[in-house]
Image (cartoon, rainbow, N blue to C red; front, side, top):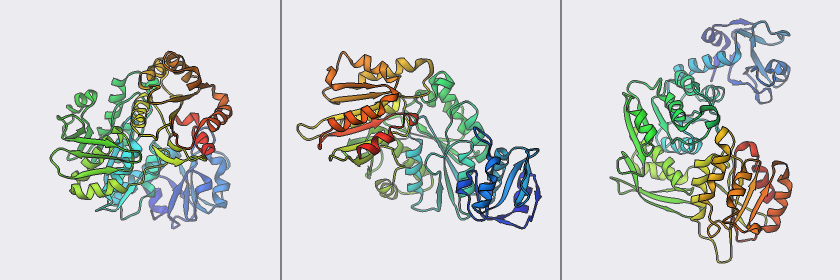
Length: 455
């Protein structure tokens, strides 16, 4: 972005103290990431961003938002006084979005948002100037920051939109007025706050609240909760999945060690993705539907999907320090995602005498059903398929107890949350060069530290 302070002040209805002809070229709320010509946004949460304005100035900030009435207002930098810095940043993002006027693709779902966002952006980049959400910067802070980071020549903006409570996607939909919305699937993520899958589906559908009248909803047609709710949407609808009632469905699917292939109805094209698993094929189908919406050919889409780069720690293969192959999928976790990953992992062929080893951390935010949902994973763990199981965290004790009937004690390992180091030591002693290892857990369990040590 590139705007004078006078224009920014008008956009957010603020008074400017200082040189209103100052040109702003970026926005940041982290004082360590501010750049020359940057506008600092002091957010107030666990820590008060106003306390870091000096750091922002030292790092090159040209101006700062400032909450009215907050003490110690700086005098050595241009100041825009506002009622609330976050709300003002969102207003500025909406203004800049309208100014650049890209087509907006909004993506949500219980699982697969980030991978689908990466796939979709890669597909659309074949023909368009595309800007996408970085990593999973997908909430009420991340979405406006993504908007403000886009270049003026952006033609399509691909936004990942997350939520952990009702009303959040309504707000993000109002901020962005998407032209296309994608819902990947409905799982149990955030069931602690929403109570049921039905309420999760209601909350996900909020992404369509401000879908443009000539827009399109692309959603997983294999999910009855979405089909039921989509009937109330007047805009164009496209479904994807594995059922023959879907608009686009997979007619063939094979998963290999490092990639998967599939075909679809009404097309002679064969598709390959550099990830394994039926759930990632589903993500690719949604990206394919978006590409078709924008007039891309199946051949263009296939080329893009074959070479897209996933965000780190999404079923990412790495090499361990004794030669083992490690699948790192440690950014987030819930029962649906764990089942999908274990199913894919169990289909990978291993050399004679080698083993499949699963390392599973707690799935967080499952509320009163946490014990039941953890224990319920026992039906997707077979000692003949996944030979060794390492479980980490207080909630995984429920799964450990449920697996005692099927796994021998020497193949089932449980560790409390303060026992990460002993678990790492045991893993390093246990893993052999030709084993394959999968790690899956909620981000708060920090299994990425285990991945680092195994490397």
